[in-house]
Length: 195
Image (cartoon, rainbow, N blue to C red; front, side):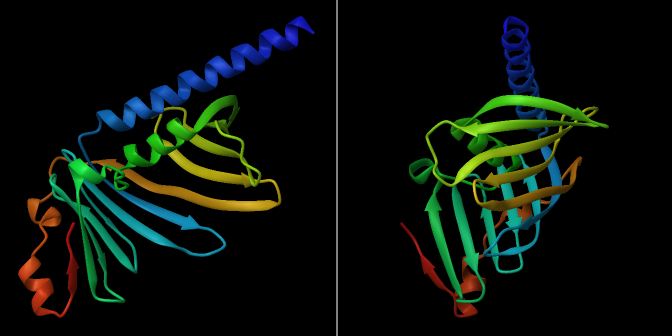
């Protein structure tokens, strides 16, 4: 019984250490581009993410969500609408890889870790009791400590899957990628909702 308890404690400590290292590694990358694939019961597709000095542009086939450092713009092309949020007030930004990781850090605790080939698989369990979600498995590259995938494990079947196809540091991203041209969107017939 004692060896199992010691092994579990070490496994938990290793999972927490690896997760912390992954979060720090991503946070330390100042400018990067990323390609993400996502799949769930309700939607699936591919997204691109550009990030530089706290500014980002997250693009899917339906929506562009970008932050210029002051405001977050959610551009919905199918309904020709732009929602503008004040970054200081609304705060619930989701746009960078750090934002995605921080959601897991806030809402889940590391439980166990296993190694398969060149990846760590960290099992994260919900902090609050969840009747549907059992755990999230985060795959982390052993060599780079960057995330490779997030897989929700539901009590009744599979949940959503996010795969990081690419997460590449870059030297510079043009500032125009994070600029919202309100005049252009108004002239194109978009309704702009401000706080």
